[in-house]
Length: 247
Image (cartoon, rainbow, N blue to C red):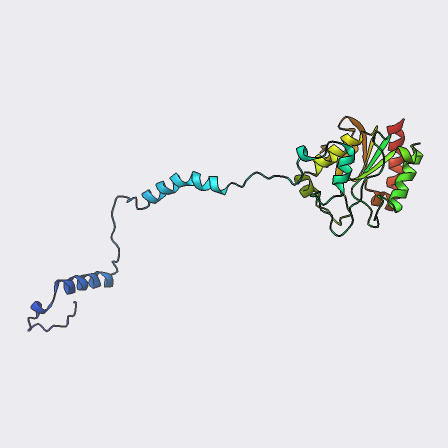
């Protein structure tokens, strides 16, 4: 039994408006636990929004695609002769990172019997590339395979000493093109590559042990100079490989 605010003997129906009756009915159904309307057929309430989203999706996708990456070093912009390349290598126009260390030029002449390519100058280099213990070791290697000092071309993959270089990012920025151009302009008879990260930069993604040539020039890859200095066994293995390579 529903209680009302009116006594049975009183007729106040004229005081109750249609809005009051409608609100009372809704209150009654709500108190009974019914607060939703149900229908047997599915209503496509979001159909228009979904169609609109599908229509605009390609446009949004096109806007989200990033622009193609342009490397800092572009092959077509690299110098075309060795003298100009060496000047560019140490200039401020060179986009390769150097930090506070000085940029060191390569040393040697084009057409050398042997090009020795190292990852970077030694930490103590200031004017001359590989002026410390690493350079002394490389000079001994050249002497052991009977290559005179003046017949060696010394070069580095970076113009300045850089702790922990990001070789993958350097490759993305065009370092590979610069290294290959350097080798092509130097025109050595052979290339000895120091550092396990460099073969990939030179277009050879396989194991460094399988490196045979670079730009048509006979090549051999080994560990970085600092590792060879620290490990006698690695120097012995390199000597064995050098004997076969130069036989």
